[in-house]
Amino acid sequence: MIEKLTDWKYIALVIFLVIIGVAIPFLWNDELSQISSSGPFKENKVNILAVGYDSNVNGPSRADTIILISLDVESNEAGLVFLPRDTYIDSDKRNFTKLNSSHVYGGIELTQETVEEMLKIDIDYYLETDFTGFEKIIDRLGGVNINVARNLNYVDKAGGLYINIPAGQQTLNGKEALQYVRYRDARGDIGRIERQQKFIDAVLSKLLSPSIVPKIPGIIKEANEAVNTNIPIQDITPFLNTAKEIDLSQIESKMLPGTARYINGISYWVPDIEESEIMVDSLVRNKSYIKNKEYQLRVLNGVGRAGAASNTAELLEKYGFQIADIGNADRYDYQSSIIKYYTQKDRETASQIAELLGGQAEFVEEAEEDSAKKIEVIVGAGYEKSV
Image (cartoon, rainbow, N blue to C red; front, side):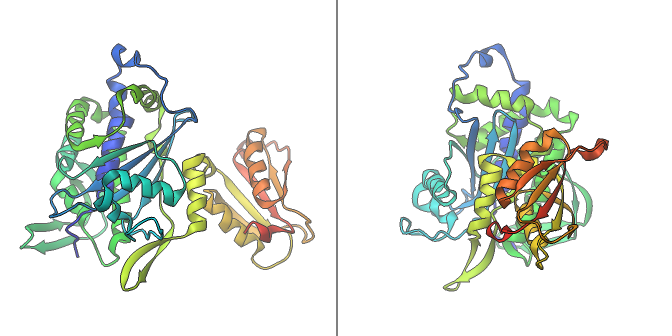
């Protein structure tokens, strides 16, 4: 099944990454470098809302794509949170219950206000676009290489939509790429989001290729025609400084945690409040999620209660940590959790875990060269308060 109102997550992200992550550094010149660097980045964070909509529909356009893009202009890290368009809005302030309807009632301004209220954050700027320039941008990139998991076939004669993309490694041109990201299978929006995230990975891979450099002027031309943004010219320099250093391969992206649910016969994506708060705090507010995924944690049960280690490991995974092993400690009478770290560089991270679990960090000197990024968590009494 295909949805006529296509999800525009891909185009907003592609255009943003092209402009901020790749194109601008090559256009650096004296005129731009002289622009005042005193922008709105007093806290070294900038949050950008990327919204996509279908301008070809009759009537007001719904925001079929909403992405929160968060940059740390000091550490040059980026976090992305994909917000499903059917996200449930439970607020007395609104006369709508789906996030994408915010665009109908108040345009990009109300969509921004709604996301700020839902996630309890401030958004500095927005990027707004429809699909007008998508095919041209992909063609300017030289197509996108992607491994199509299975044959994608769909025919809608009335709508003039014909999709026939075979499985296997393909180089999709603009038209084919649009078909790929529009395809909607039995899993609905969630399956399509997963496929579009795969598409985004393929675009990032293309952007990191040296072959992209001579194509940048043409990409900029198409992007400029497709994007509506409120980023003022005086704030360009901070973006330039970030763009020169950011590693596109290290961009971390996640979908807003939640579950698909019917409410009064209508399908919604209902956010998990607790998990969403953890994600926003660690991926948007301080970017710790990106750092934490470099760590391999060994989580040991030091109280003897079933689930003490596994539940704690599950909690730590929500903060981005990789779990290398789950097991039992040498004894079961630990009065508090002990967080062992083996290099001084990991002291801050170990201390943060200790604070989360109500325990204490302990340095253990180890001669092994690969001891960095390894932390052992012994779960002690009181762990229930954190999980």
